Length: 213
Ligand SMILES: *[C@@H]1O[C@H](CO)[C@@H](O)[C@H](O)[C@H]1NC(C)=O
Ligand SMILES: *[C@@H]1O[C@H](CO)[C@@H](O)[C@H](O)[C@H]1NC(C)=O
Ligand SMILES: *[C@@H]1O[C@H](CO)[C@@H](O)[C@H](O)[C@H]1NC(C)=O
Ligand SMILES: *[C@@H]1O[C@H](CO)[C@@H](O)[C@H](O)[C@H]1NC(C)=O
Image (cartoon, rainbow, N blue to C red; front, side, top):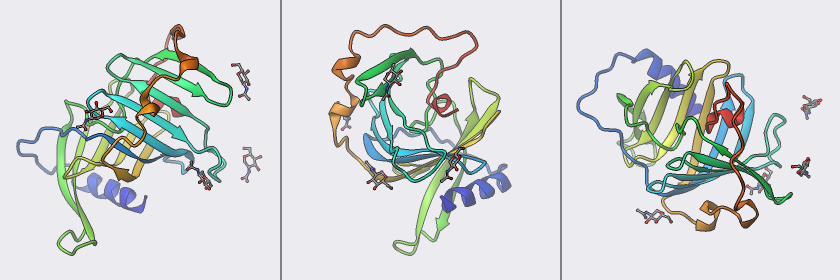
């Protein structure tokens, strides 16, 4: 969390750093923790994610018993290739199936992202004391705004800052393992199957980030 905030300040100061020829990397399959925090300091959600990088599928389940007042109970299963997602209520065995209007999400660097800089956080030349990260930036397609994504050299996500109206977000990742520990989490639960896609009200944009607004 502190690292991410420090990075943000640093990125703002070095926004003119120049890129050579960099292509956005693709993250591997992953399991880990993710926190969604507003720039006002509210923890919107904190929980576990599972990500299939080839199939472009993401599951995020927030921990409702996390002792933070503003946190939301959310269970999302997103299929970015198909452009649909499910909001799952496991207790209730119910779900809502919706269309995704924007497929941007914090585990993939958009193809048109611009390389900003390579940063040394701490001191990477001392074992266990530092991390070398690449920072990517770009515009958000659905909202007026910018993002800044930091990933390790192996393309593991560290944090993402979304600067947008009406709310800016910090998404922070931790405890990443490079495997899908429970593939069943990426399968549509039986009680959600055959569900019709709900109509998206005019003016609404469904996206990963919008689920937290
Ligand atoms: C990632 O996970 C998917 C789904 O389980 C699997 O089909 C794919 O082979 C995995 N990719 C790698 C590189 O392990
Ligand atoms: C949820 O948060 C509580 C309180 O911090 C913790 O005890 C519990 O292990 C967490 N559960 C999961 C599934 O992470
Ligand atoms: C949580 O938020 C509610 C309403 O916003 C407030 O009434 C309550 O006192 C808060 N609880 C804690 C523990 O902060
Ligand atoms: C179960 O779902 C219904 C309708 O979808 C909702 O009104 C109700 O609040 C839900 N109950 C719980 C315990 O989540």
